[in-house]
Image (tube, rainbow, N blue to C red; front, side, top):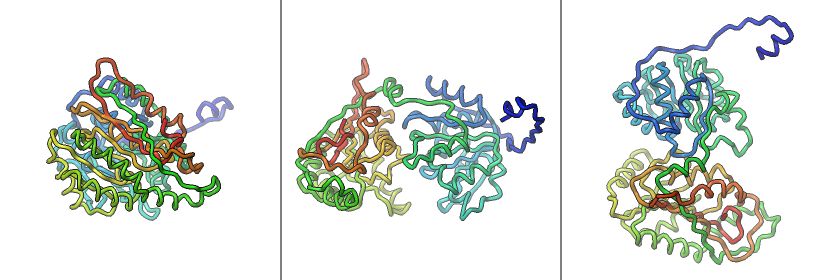
Length: 414
């Protein structure tokens, strides 16, 4: 804009209304990895911008480095895993729990130094809280949510001098991702899945599976997709096939995450898995905080020489789920969007001391696929995620992710 006005010899006067907040002394205790250092150097040069990096890149750690370097009071918007942010802040900034505020989800503590908030607590029914103006830096974790109206309004209204967005899936299914850049700035640094896969200490393996599932829906029957999902979930032969693979993984003492999309198939699978292992943990929507805490404590008690199965709905674990010891993922339902597949596959991209990670690629029926657009992930999108998971020279680790598609020929099978 300034260049355009100067070209037409229009005199301009700029009034700075952004604020840098209070000076706060944080000392970063840790060392960034080489790729994180490159990203940090670039991001530090700008007061606004977005980091686009794959799951398990270490975005939180990098953001904490920026908080320490800039030395201003910071508000972090994070819907899930507020406690994880707080724990890592204590570890890498060497600050006490008392110095970190948690606001939202029943908690209303602010310190004015480093506060982690749920966006709904900042913007409610179109009203933005007055104290948002106190912060010199706003960090939006999982910033692809910023396109929601209340979210966008809060970020746009904030006068913070520094604004940073973090996300692994910037592209939104509804096409509204440009709103992210209008509010947080351009993508300053991007890390591809291929590049990250090449430097990880483990490799992945894709295992396509084929079932006998078939249903006679016409191509025009996309409006009956919910009926199709119901039939798919209740198909005993397909479920038994999935259970047989889970049983094999349990026998090998793998650390298993089984994702489904709905409550009904979750209940059906849980009854059968419960007969195979004592270490079955179920995570789904509707659980209270105490229930979740009890489940997570039980998960932590499982030793490395034991098997474990975590059965969950994909929506519950779509973002922020952090159990790096997992080595086998079963995706038992159709995925219609690349971003969802990225989030789910990302559950097994985190570094761990375990030896193997497995990617299982599709439970397919032997008949022709139902041509329902809602069930397709383009092959190119899937291959972009799977292709970098080739054996790395000298690596002895392998992780498996089993993508159980409903029938033969569904394109996300790769």
